[in-house]
Image (cartoon, rainbow, N blue to C red; front, side, top):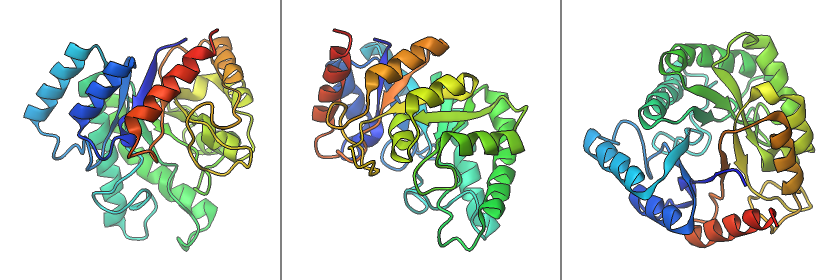
Length: 279
């Protein structure tokens, strides 16, 4: 089994330090930072806390698998501000958040920062093309920071947002960032399954685009509700086989953000189930 990480966004009722200790005790080798008000919001994650966190990670034998900059609760909610807000000043909040998250990732040795794929187009007043243009424009503002830090911007397709499927990611990438190596995909297995993609086939078809992997289970109804691995119907053996086939050697991060009252329990259940697939 490849080394597994767990996202701290399930531990929103705990401190980042508490989540690190819990995950180390359970047996994870990596932790994904939630770059938001709950844990590692870059402007308030000050030098002293960063030093303490770096020491704790070293002491507990964990590394940072990814910096999750998808949400922006400090300024809005899960999705807002989007990358294509009508008012430029709100787009700038999202742009600045992503830049700071890239710098945070560099400091902690993470290779990727995962971001939302623009935001929800419904009720935005924009067409898909208009939203795509604005999203790309915003990302080009972020690209210089990605290049300078050596950290990849990992766009995460999600049901109901501008980019939902593997093909939609490819279309966006080819249209706006065809030769830009700092923009790739955060391959969320559950999200792809929700929209009718076969996650294993997506992995096989676009190996050069996968910068990081998120993992959760999903029910047979394909509803976007994150479940603990083993509680849904996703064939993780096929997913891991596909990752093996393409030579993917980076992190697989379990993301179970809905389970804020049982975070440690589902983290333990997840790793036990995923390790059992080796037998």
